Amino acid sequence: MNSNEQLFQRAQGVIPGGVNSPVRAFRAVGGTPRFIQRAQGAYMWDAEGTKYIDYIGSWGPMILGHGHPAVLDAVHQAAADGFSFGAPTEREVELAEAIIDLVPSVEQVRLVSSGTEAGMSAIRLARGATGRSKIVKFEGCYHGHADALLVKAGSGLATFGFPTSAGVPAEVVQHTLVLEYNNIEQLEACFKAQGDEIACVMIEPICGNMNFVRASVPFMKRLRELCTQHGAMLAFDEVMTGFRVALGGAQSVYAKLIPGFEPDMSVFGKVIGGGMPLAAFGSTKKVMSQLAPLGPVYQAGTLSGNPVATACGLATLKEISRPGFYDALAARTQSLVAGLTKVAQDAGVPFVGDSEGGMFGFFFASELPQNYSVVMATDKERFNRFFHGMLDRGVYLAPALYEAGFVSAAHTEADIAATVAAAAEALRS
Ligand code: KE4
Image 1 (cartoon, rainbow, N blue to C red):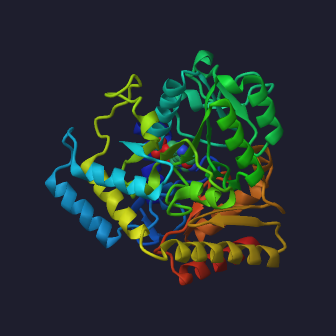
Image 2: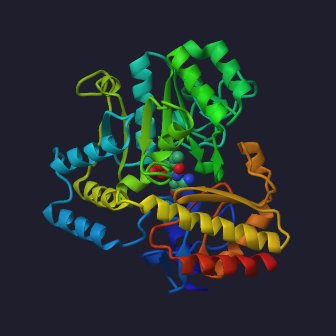
Image 3: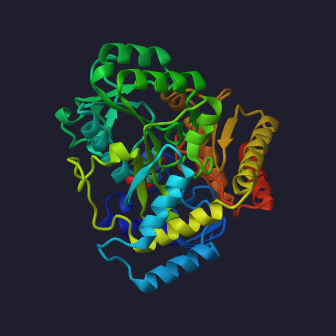
């Protein structure tokens, strides 16, 4: 038994499934999870010393690559000054100011410790601010594991969702409607029937939890119009896309495609913590003033705005704000997708991919899926064989066909070439 297997056995004795987050257990792809010992730049090393080119990047945060010197230095300095005070610090103000500078739709933010916490708080705030209970989400989008969001589509459009998890009472999700991503007809029907009762619609504007599915421009345009018309808040879950697909997040991509486009609420995470536990949600000053201690919507957190995490986030934002950062990252990511597409074509394997900024996805299919059911109908067996073929060749991809991939500023053209070469071999075998 090798060290990863030994560690996995030991872990399963004391942690459910041996992991602290289910997707790490490799259940979707099979095999033994790699226990990572250390990471540097674009690389990770597991318990056996095996080196991998890392395309997970901690599921998005590590946009600079692992161990960026300026970020490491900022974290060391902050830690030396104190881990946590339970009192306000200037650095939280600096990070809030930096986010507000970069995201025009956000006038105020509240910092929290995880994307789940940010999404949960955003829903509560939208309900408090509108006085309405209903929320809408889309099948295939994941907004963290807050009860009200663990919902799958109800039988009919107008019926409410069913819990996707045990332990979530039906009453808790009775106000959650689930629609099909990119389905304008369903959007129209839902708003026609219940638009004035909807507190907010939460969406992943480019959905990384279906690997990589873009909301079409007509769909997003109509969603914006219907929310405005019915007084429902449009909440952008940018936990994955924020500061990853562009400096201004996915909303800046849609603002270029739909004149004047802005969401009403934004949720951030991952990149803004630079790998440390930090997330945020923001909106207009008017909406945010509904939050305690000013308003009636309660929200709190012992480690919210943690001094070490904010130092890590600020140092990360400073680096990614440098001119040309995203152009270079997007070009590197595009060359990966183009290379993989070429070797798949050479191998006669149906393959299609897409990317925005430093986020990419691919499917063993002939055209890009537009919704969850199409994503889940793509060739799972082939994906799993490809995943292991790449892992065995030192390339660590997301261990599930419905997860996105991430390129960092530390990935070189040589890393991309090595990845494409590994893919050519894996696909041939
Ligand atoms: P966290 O609570 O995991 O920090 O964030 C939840 C979340 C919210 N919104 C979006 C769009 C997200 O992608 C996530 C978390 N993403 C998953 C990967 N798809 C995190 C990996 C995991 O669950 O271990």
